[in-house]
Image (cartoon, rainbow, N blue to C red; front, side, top):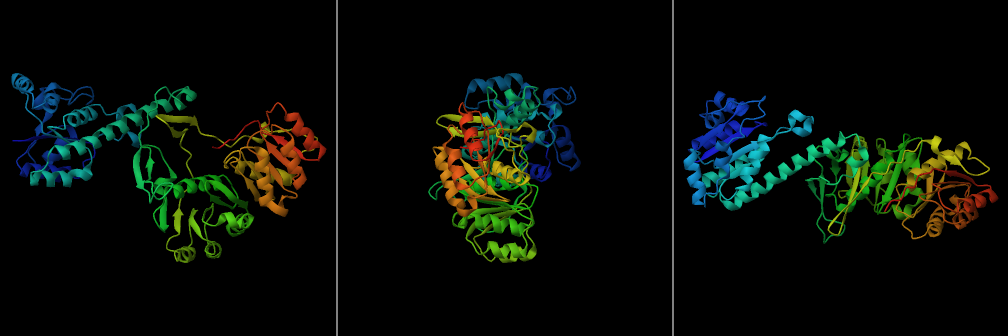
Length: 502
């Protein structure tokens, strides 16, 4: 008669599953709350204490950690010597292990670190050639169907074992990350000697960067993300670039505490503006570079109303993301069946690290924060910025930090009028930004994501009519740029912090 060991924290469906196993002639073993739930339901079950000869000890920290349990799970039934040892010690085989773990991620603490559960799961998964392991309540029905049909074979058990090891791996990674977060040495916690990171697939994407590539969005267990609660209200499935660009747009627009709109294309902002209303902010952002806005991502930090929706609907757009859409706006925009509409909360910015793949490994760094206090900024020129210039400088500074390097951004009033990003040299970045700004460059301010190695960029900006500049400083030739700024009456602010983005 086959035997199953059931020990679950989440008891969803366990009574029905156990009852079905009993009806199929299985002997059931269990412990603690699971045994009580089955007994209360009138299901015949043997308590694990009868196998081990010991009641649970140490506040239930030790219940199933015993040779009579693990021997029955781990025995290789193709080896006569294993079977002889089982018989010698009076240990019976266990054919199925059904375990789900303490929910460590719900409220991380030492007492929610499961020990016995993962040990049984790993033991059963290791011995998948002979033992089945179930770690997900969603698998109960399929497992029962296979057992009833007589095809619960090694292939099915192998798939369940893969899932089991992924679960225990993610569980250990979550614990290791929590211990790192509690470390007093935050720098070491961010880039530890061993990086424990396991991700679970949250969404299969329409395709990758290109249609011939596959893609998926993964989430880190226990890490809160705005993506988890975002709702797609309309449109096709998201692609890899839709997700990537939407993340960039949503992160940038959420930095502003006034009505703001951001248009992103190929991960670069091509329109950024503030306004008295969301409609005004969007109109300004779009008009700053209407050509680049075609096929872009629109993000706004307030509700999209009908009037704004009508303006958005005039342009081909891939994604619109906002905190909310009015009923009228949703009706208007849903008329475009392919337009993806996302309703989302502000980003949590819960990630402490940025990870990229390289050949055979990963490249890891701490996340770039763009929240330097103004008190740390230095006015390097004879003239200080006016109040109006300061407002534009801060808008340009936030935007340039979200633009691929090398980057120069021009802002005039509450509108980013020119973006030059992803260039090998800073002068070309300035020329592109100036060209896109056109007549709006006159009277604008400029932001540079890194220092000026020569005075030529300042000269180019001055010739276009730029009146103030914000940049990190730190070049051995800072004096050349400062002298050029003073010559043209440009106010220059040094932040002391570079914001490369590659």
